Image (cartoon, rainbow, N blue to C red):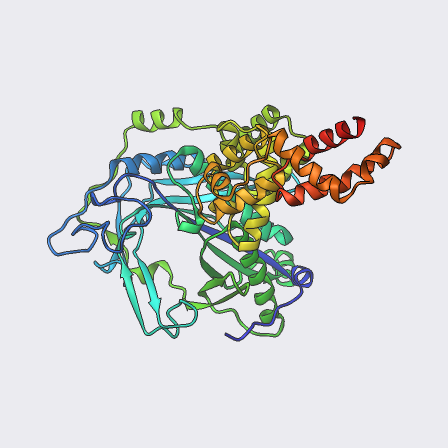
Length: 509
């Protein structure tokens, strides 16, 4: 793949204004699929979580999942949307190799939720309002595995395998209105928006929202328009023109959302500045190389030949149902953040670090499991974030909040030092079990038996017989050599503070 020419980011923002739009797909964690009673869970052997309905076999008919309707209404309300008294499903016609019936049941001109607003907080505390056009229900497609190529994509593959386990999983697609005014904050705003949606659906309990599993995916639309053209249009009293957009599909981590937007700004700016034109198309983000590549020409709504789904009745929720779901909504993210900051006792800077890390939910869950807020913050934004960055994945995909709380409990009980805890964490991430299991299997627990410590101290003193005299002469820092030798001999499992106490006691004898 030829590497595209990129313009310096600051220069790109001087010449062009970025215009954004996002489509976030949220898989609902209902027990069964959207239109069948096939089980809905991640994983499983290929093509086992399916029924004749999911396979589009002749004579089968869809039946709407009532729980998915409730979840969709709750999400719409949490997004500040109005709920449509009567909404319809539609058939979206397109060549779907991963949907056997060759169309998708979605919603078109009558979405269940519309006209919402989400407040997004940037890293410096500024708030940005993002207008929601609609949130509509649909079914997910299956998964294609391309075999024989070097990239895992269809280009160069010898053949493709289809797994229909995901086909028919309930989805809500959240579509924003056009977003103006982000300017150089566009990449950060994209990340913050998706993070906010993830926090909302997690707090509602309607989705696992694990981006690495595809439970939550973002299609990022971006176009550029020259600042000169905007100025000229405004001077003439005309609406400023829009540029041609690209849509980067299925970006599956917060970090990738931010990076892909920045890359597209630089790529499009270079093309436009050189007199070229932008092709309206889908693009794919490559995490390993940090670039996007062309997909297919982007279709408009007319190309999908939408028409009402003849096998499903309109969805007409009662006012009583809507109001009961509204009453059950959890706190809004902004209110929740303020409450947690006060409850945890963090400074404004400390709490902003948590928000910026995108790990607020993980830290809250770890605290709820029994860990102190300070320790939960330390481990999630420190060592776990470091491991996640090294692996180019989201931190939440590496380890569960329950395991982090268990790890912190072992530290606070004196059974692990921070150094040993980092080794235990590496074992958990590697799939060796829970922290307790890893500590046992790797022999990482702190040695608290004074007898074992004294034996190691005596061995170290025998190799350095002058240390005790130095300590008796007031050179207490000389104990460090013995402590280091003991820690090395015991492979870091000794309690350094207790070793120091025992060495100083020996010097007084």
